[in-house]
Length: 249
Image 1 (spheres, rainbow, N blue to C red):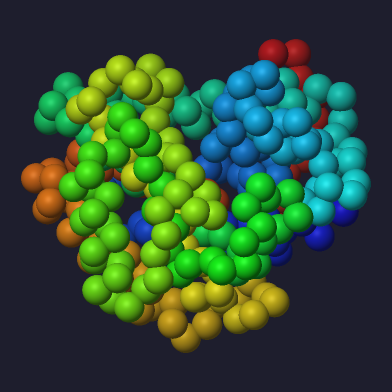
Image 2: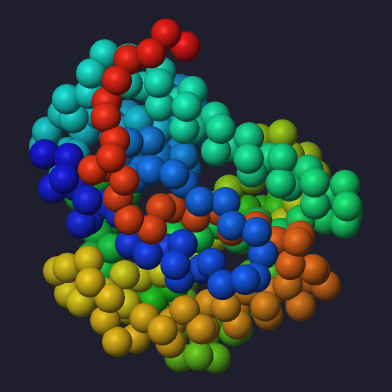
C-alpha cells in the first residue's frame, strides 16, 4: 500500500533541482509518507489532520484506505524526524541572523500536474510554478522578483494557488521581519515523463533556471549565499530502508 503512494506523493528530485551551490540546503530525510515536516506538529493546529493528512498521515492520498502504522509510529517520527528537521532550520536561520542580520528561506517543492483527491484546491488549471507567500515574512519585492523572473522564462505562474504559505520557524513566525520566506512549487509535468518518476529532457534546463532564480532573488535582496536556505522535500523515497518501529523515547 505505502509503495503505491510514492509516485503521486513524492517531490521527485526536488533537492536535485534546487541544490546547486546557491545557499545552504536543509532537506527532509525521509518521504512525506513517513513524516510530513511541512505540517504543523500538533494535529489541533493542522487543518489537514482532519482528513488524516497531518504530520503523520493516517490515510492514503485518495482517502480510501487507512495507513497501517504500528503503535508508536507518530511519537517516533515526530521525535526522530520532525523535531530534528525543524531544529536544523531554526539553528541555520539563527546563525544567519547573528552573522548577517537577515535570512531568506526558499521553501522548495514540486506538485502533481493534476489535483490529488486529498487536496483542497481541485482547479484543473494548474500553473508551471506556484509561489507561496506569508503576509509578514514575504516582502512585496521578493514575490515580484520571483514572479517576474519565472514569467521572463516563459513559465505560467500563480501566487498562493494551488498551494499557499511558506515555511518559517515558529520561533520567528510573525515576530522577526528580518526573516524572509518564499515557497517555490514546481509542476512535475515540466520535468517528468508522464505517469512515471523518470526525468524528461527538460530537467537540465529547469534546473539551470531555478539556479538563476535563486541568484536573482539573493541579488534583489542584497544577500550572500550563506544567508539563504532551501527547505526541500526528499529527492527520492527512503521507504526501502525504513523500518517502522517503536522506541522508548
